[in-house]
Length: 441
Image 1 (tube, rainbow, N blue to C red):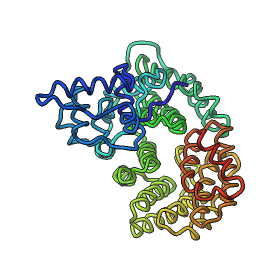
Image 2: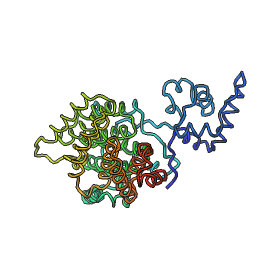
Image 3: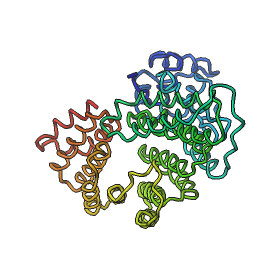
Image 4: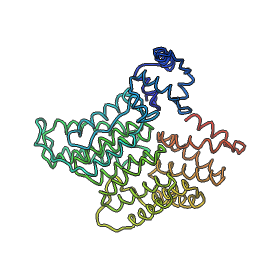
């Protein structure tokens, strides 16, 4: 796997084919071209600190970087560091004309490491995408296209194969990522080149959306957040074209979950609110309320958090004859309990949080190995807050073992983020060894 580029500056530099030393030289030349002949003060170690997030360049350095990358100064002020750097990717609008383009763009990015970028969509782009989805009505499909006719048996087989791949236990899905990519590429070709009725077209768009969601989650678990966003953008466009409002709501909730995961909870509220305006099934609404509660908790708003937790519980207990949408069929009491506990952790109520998290882990089916690892790491965070270091050590080690076995890089990074909380307890047996493991992640 290609080395993951994790910062916009590193990405912008890579697009130019520059090393850090090359960038320093470009900055020196840009400063010399200024009328006053400035000295940059930037060296390779400074660039390294900018790229690993330990330091933000001062305004003069940012303006020199803008000169180097050809970015207008007004964008530096408008977007802020590091979001003004080149390589930003704006989402495709929710419109029928972008169904194939969004899919092909995401597939190209998945297959070409040079196209892999570094960031999730920004708050403004994500909020705009959510608003389009909530307000626009899908266009009717055009008349059948020239090319091979898409018949019922072929589409039945594609749908059944996709359901089978999606139903595999978590540990096996890492082996099927390329199969899912191939399925998505096949469905994209059929949408683009096939000859089909309006009804078949709706099924194709829904299938493309479902596949793009799954492919996006695999990339999300590998820490490739921008690629996940591209796939989910394509999924949202195609869910809209397929007139599947519940699936579209689920995709918006995935964007929101990603924002919360990346410590951008403020970006999650608007998409979840838009999703709730359209989602109908109680299970779907329960998950949306739960994720919005997580956002409110991370923002330090206990009242809004508790309102959404109560709404999530009420929705989950609502009887309905209709089955839950496929994207949230897994949502149940275990998820409600653990996410409620995570909210309590964010609100500083560790003892109550641990009770809810323990309850949720006990309810979780064995097949959801990745989810169990994520839950255990939340449990370890609570244990550290409660100064139960030995138990936190055991729980973190178990979760890290699972993350390594199933190839869930996102879980491994979550474990690594606990390292600062473990460091003050180096005298506890086993902690030094765990810190070494975490440093290698």
